Length: 581
Ligand code: M6R
Image (cartoon, rainbow, N blue to C red; front, side, top):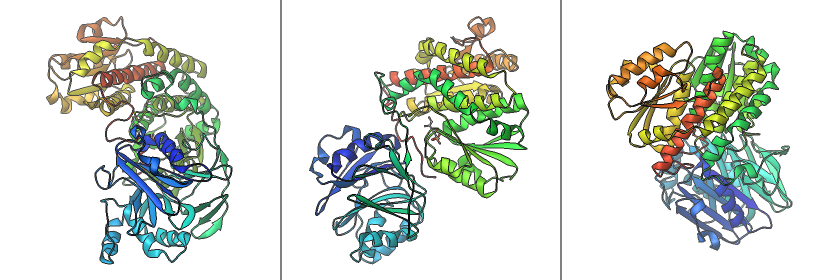
């Protein structure tokens, strides 16, 4: 979480940094700040969103600077806790993404030696520690501080007396763009690609000293050279393109995304083969990516008979890791801290590792042995939609290579068609019921259980209505106590092996006067009979059904949040990339 941007070169730094931070706002948006340097440092920081800032950074002059957009971890969002943070003298200022785990102890020591702290943050200790370590050499002072910091960090630092920007990284993402006599540092490449596509990705333990016209890299104090990579990035795809919200635009991109991602995964027959012959497959992921992984579990177990374990990445460290399991880490951003550390645990247990991600050069791509790119294009809305579809398509593509599903071309075509139809289906009656609710249940059986979990996650994160995704068979074992005439249930009820049980579950709910939104076939008379509202799903294979129901649920969540006036692309308290554990 938190986005950081730095610049040194020949342009005015503040506008470059402000524009860059706007691109990183998906990482956190409760406060922001910018510092620039001439012969002294100018710092401006505010509670609120950088995208809403007017001219307050205009007084930040100079051609070197750093900036930050925050997702609060230590101390509430306010002007004081916003970054940059400075030392007692104002000579040094830093921005930080990550968590300094030993900050309390460090802060006590610094205070006992006379340092005064302005903020509640963990990050501020870094500025004071640089102040203490300084003997006239800025890089040497930063170098001396880093080994004392426990936890994770991407740091950018300025010193009033040195015409340099220093960058350091440990377990939080940081890249540098190499321009023409100018350097850009950022949490990811998005703020940089408008200026240069030559990107250097810092490794854990790296420190970079950027000066005018030169950059010096070191790792653990030893000079090194890191290669740059050329980043392919579609700048237009990261704009709203006439849609009211990124989320809506991204929902509408899904027919193409499914196709693209399915085909990209098919280019990895060696991975399909590895999975086909594995003793077991273990998938680690968080949030929406976890729900996508659960889809693979149901398909792979049913169609290929392969045992698949799916774990929340945050819990993986507490569980056993058999070395004969192939481990797949799924992450849109490729930077989710829990997924990364779970992947590292799997590697350390000698498991073959695969990453499925949407972001080139992200940390996960360097931690895994093999990588499948999802090809969804930049996803700007905090709520994941097209990336979930891309993950589903990637799994479908891998399954097609395992020769256990019903053929490449039919899955690709049928899913695409189903998504297109679901984009046009009227969901307004369902939305009308949801808008009035304070609690919702999403239920399904079999493959539609993870689809229900994802539907509920979408609803809660953007509408703030409490929504739970449940296996329909489980709902009698407790949640039934919550069902009333004010608790709508959204139920997936489609022909297949779970159909009759689903119908029985729905009748049991109906007997409790629960408003039922059935998602199923339009001509299903039994479903018509029990459901208050029927949202039709186009007929097709299971892949097409999953794709269509997913889109319908995304749209129900979107229009409910819209009706409630929520901040759809930037929901409260959330950030797109969760880079702290
Ligand atoms: O980048 P990742 O896929 O690793 O992110 C994992 C979750 O943080 C993410 O899917 C989150 O649940 C989404 N905001 C949900 O829409």
